Amino acid sequence: MTLYERSYSFSDPNWSDDPVVENDEGTRTHLGQVRSAGQQYIAVIIQEITDTENTVVKVISKDATELYEVTVNKHAVLWDVNDNGEVLLYTETQSGETLVKELVCLSNSGTVKWTVDLTAELGEGSAGGIEIGTEWAGIVYNDIVKFYDVSDGSEVQSIDTNINWVSNSNDGLYQECYGSNTGFTLVYKGSDYKVVFVNKDGDLWAYTPSFPYEHGRELDITGRDVDCGIVSVRTFSRYGETNPRTRFHVIRRTGEVVYLEFSGYLSYKWLISPCSEWAILAQGNKIALYYVKSTGLLHISDIDYASGKSGEQSIDLSFYGKYAIILHDSNELYAYQLKDGVVKDSLSNPLQSRAVMVCSD
Image (tube, rainbow, N blue to C red):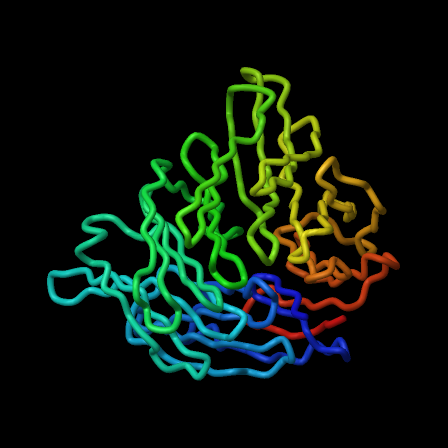
């Protein structure tokens, strides 16, 4: 399976740091990267500096091979990849006086499979988030969620949720929405601090996590399991200017919620594994591993960071929770084996110009 970390991806039984992708920062800009729900593929999104209307899409398999690289003559704003290596882009491209807004689906060979023109539908607005699974793709904007058939792009469902989409990006740290492996379920951050689950059949569930106080509220959906039935969520609130509280939740679509609570405004990183049984909390100098139960979070162990390392810009967790990846404040990336509490490998890449496959279990 693939471990993914923003500009890096780890999946090589030899734990090699040989680059699968190395971009020349002088001519290309790394826009972002996303892994599929089941950790089968990573899509790396690149922009040519000399032609910002073009988008380069590079898809890499968990076996450290490049599936394809293709240039799309459109400006990508949002992206996702499924477990078949197909990519969904939301693009906004100027054509004369019109800003053309489209969904573009790429096949697993890099050809354009279908497009959906959203220009009239979105009007002056934009898509909030997109997702693609192996069977269905989804989009959320305003309070509308739509699902499309991945085979041909035909619309199969439109749901008015009455809950407006709110950005979940947090400066690119998290996805604007998340989808399940098949694309059947989409989850997004909604108005009034709601976590909203919607599926292709039109079913809707919405939950507001408990906040101890009314002021300064924040909410981030930090990850989901492969079925998009469980999400990890970070919240913050305070009483006036005092008593700040940070909570790290696991929220199930069926309504069960468990959480950890800490005093202070904490930027710790919190993530659930795709298999849904494990979660990690990266806490500045250590990784806390938890077993996820519907009735609570069972603390299993603490793993110290590598000597001299501190902080966490971003994290990821392998499918079954065996390995964690931490991008430390030093811009060094470390892979940790959680069971034994050992460092498996590390990589220094301050320019974040490579996507690298390095570990597998």
